[in-house]
Length: 380
Image (tube, rainbow, N blue to C red):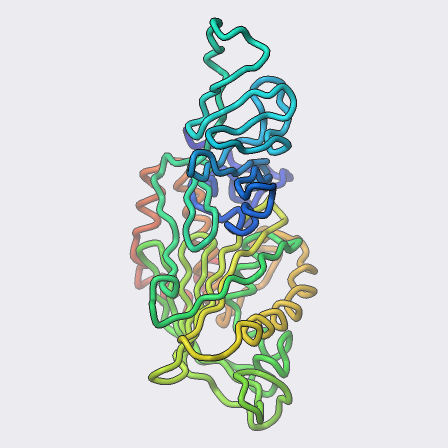
C-alpha cells in the first residue's frame, strides 16, 4: 500500500498538529488485550470488532493464528465480526462465506462446488502480532516499522500487571503529553504526586535518536507517613524523588522508570492508540520488582492518578493538538516541544516516502536545536 501524500487542508479535521492518518498507519498500535479477544465470543477466538485510525477492523484467531482484517465481508459489505470463528475459518453471519487465516475465501455455501470462486473473494488483511498479551495491528507495512520495546516484560526481576484499557475523549497526542508533563503534578495531583510550593523542576538534558526520546527528571513526592509509596497529606515534608527516566518510542509509546533503591524499581508502560482524531485508547502496565505486595495496591494507585487526570485532559480545546499559535509553550514544556517537532517531521517525511520516515526515526538531534530549546526559542 502506498503512502498518501495528501495533507489535511485548512479547516479539515486532521490528527495532532494537523498530521495525516496515513502517517500513523505506518506504525504498530495495540487494538485489544488478548483477554478481550478471548472473552469476545464463546470459544475464545473472537471475532472482536475494534477501531483504529477511524477504520473498523476485526481480530480473530483462525487456525491458531491471530489475524486482523477490515471488518467487511467482500460479498455484501456486512460486518464479519457479527459472525464466528471456526477451527479453520471465519464464518460470515449473513451468507455463510468462510475465510481462512490467509484471508482466502474457502467456502461460498450458495455456490455449487464445481464453480470457481471470484478472485476478489478475499479479506483485506492487516499486519497483526500478539506481544505483551496485547494484539498489535499495523495498517500499512510499507515502512517496515517495528513493535515498541517493553523492557519490564522481559525482565525476570519485574512483575508486570496489565491495567484495564481506558478510552478518553482526547487525541493520542493529548494523552501522551499529559503523561510526560511533570509540571502539572503539584496541581492536578496535589497530595498524590506533589504539592505547592514544589512547582519548579530541574532542567534536564534530553537525548533524541533511534526512534526514542529519553530524559530524566526529578519530581516531588507528596508526604505520606505510612508505608505506601504515595498518599496524602501533602505538607512541608514533601520530598524530591530520585530521578525518573522517561522513554518515548515514537510516536505514541511511553515508559516511565523509577529506581527507588538498589533492590526496588518500578515502571509504567503505556501506548495511546489513536481511535480517531479526537479519541484515544490507552493500553498500559504497571510493573515493579518482584515482592509480596498485592496487585490491587499498584492498580489502585494508577486508578487514583488517572481519575485525577481524566477531567483535565477531557477538557482540552481542541481535543487534539492544533496549530502552534493556539497555545503557548515555555521552557518547562521542553519534552513536549521536542516530541511535537519530531511528530511534524515524521508526518512530512511520510508524505515524501517510506525511506524518509526511517531517516527521521533514526536521526540524532542537532546540538543547535538543543541550544534553541534551552533558550526558549526552538520550534514549537
